[in-house]
Image 1 (cartoon, helix red, strand yellow):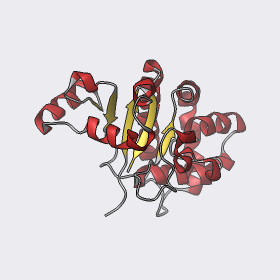
Image 2 (cartoon, helix red, strand yellow):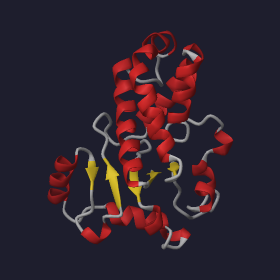
Image 3 (cartoon, rainbow, N blue to C red):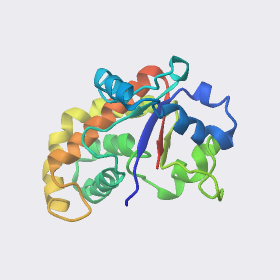
Image 4 (cartoon, rainbow, N blue to C red):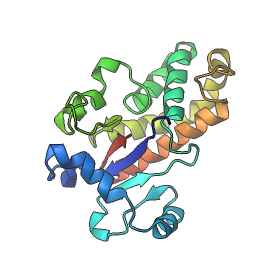
Length: 206
């Protein structure tokens, strides 16, 4: 079985009241619905955001991707696609797309990946043996920049079609099609817009 991604949006102020070593478990436990039926109904009503049935736990929510089955693989493949095609993209578009994707599904400098360091100490680092780890961290102060970059790059997505065809189309380890690639980008755009609206952060758990 492959790695899964559970993407969460959370209020950092509330999360900061929980001891660092317990924050990942708190997110995991809070967003697991008590009843699948109720969770399904909420999902239909919120367009992808799955809210805990308990109103007191409404400081975080899980995003259920429409374009994946919960696997982390499509996100990794999209990141690889961007890495390989970005040199063919106009510099003005490339810069904005870099800003949008960096730290979400692509790392400009993998050594600075916040998930490896526990998001600058906000979560336990992956080097802490026996502690659960995170796949990505985007703190609230970084989210508005992502949302702004998405708004700026969205009108230029069609300009990525030829670079995608040249570097990614038909190759294993990349999205199956340009439409799949951009559909996933649109979902990440929606996620960052909602998180920016709330001034919340984003966390990806395996």
